[in-house]
Length: 292
Figure 1 (cartoon, one colour):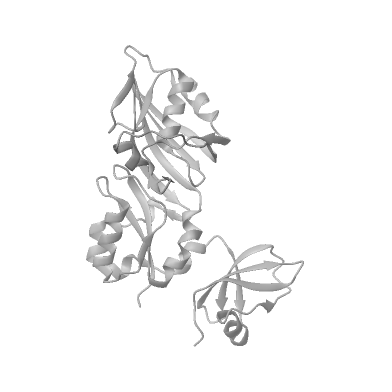
Figure 2: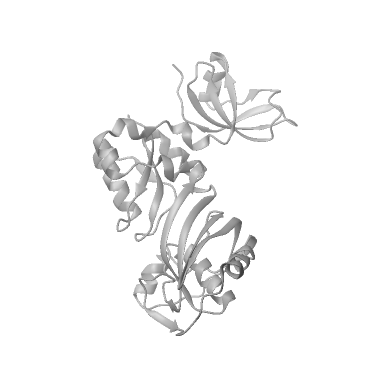
């Protein structure tokens, strides 16, 4: 079975599920999934996993992400973006100068709590929040801890600003835009969003739907592209056979406490293991490769 990862440049107007359906048709596979839902109106990086590589989705879905966002001052909506119903407005607001805006953005760096928007895919009581929102039902949402590792102003073009943000999984940029507006003193919405990175998958390397359709093989990356940030360990044939059968392997080095990408010395990717110098064992976490 074909397997690997396609770094898709999702266009605006498609859901993440639409992209998965496109990839299924293009590659003739049923076993396809994506890492990190992207709003239909948003564009950008959407890693899509095929075949056995779907077992590695969690290692990308949990990775940090980066976005370029446009914020528009002057009104707020029930959805937090410019597609929702207007719930507040302010006329005559003068956008602050760039240095003041940049200072406000910088104040959001670090760990904080966010309340997920009603128009999100989080499930409460077995139903997605956006389904409840469409039915006119509002429910209490618990705040979630998020981390913004970097945020910076790109430009001010009143009544909008453009900014870049790097953040943890689960950060809602539409909520961030509303919070920025509140701190500046004016209602605001997210008016456009591009995801520029998911883990190691970048916008510069993403393939459009047209490029994927024209040459599917060229767009397909190996499954271990999802774990490029992990340290690597290489096993001989005997060790590789034990690993692929789920057995722990005595291993005194490397002195790395945590997850490792495991390879056969011939270069074949075998999966993910956990290693602790205190208990020098390589313990299988996710076996992907097979014995020859």
